Image (cartoon, rainbow, N blue to C red; front, side, top):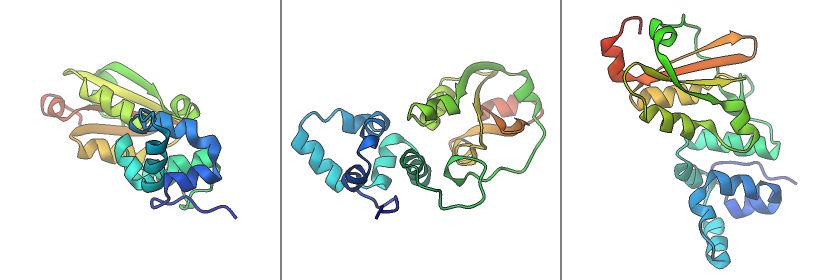
Length: 185
């Protein structure tokens, strides 16, 4: 019987049932991958839950667990969703002027990253922290990344997301201080 993947699932338990996930987990958790001593790594796997591992990735626990479930082929707990992790679409809003006028400094393709086992949230956060005034990060995806949108807003960024075509989402992020200097936010 396959154990459902939960935030309290230990990494050792997960890998015992899904050894094919080891490469992806090590890529997602570089701190764990850097442990070369097999005895120490085994001990860390025994003692670390997915919730704790999520903190090392910089992702919210629910979002990280949803990604790991998808890697393992387990169904999501939420029934209504628009993408990985049961992401519920945000209410539609018109594209603000800044999302049409700002320079796209970084473009991130979520689907390409997820296909290689990487989660785009950390990349988006890193790119957004490097933005200069008048610049933005654009994330393209086949799903509404609502947890990332909420997280970026909480971290002090302006964010807009919308479905640009059926099954194609575009999310734009800019520094909040640009909002004070621009119209149409």
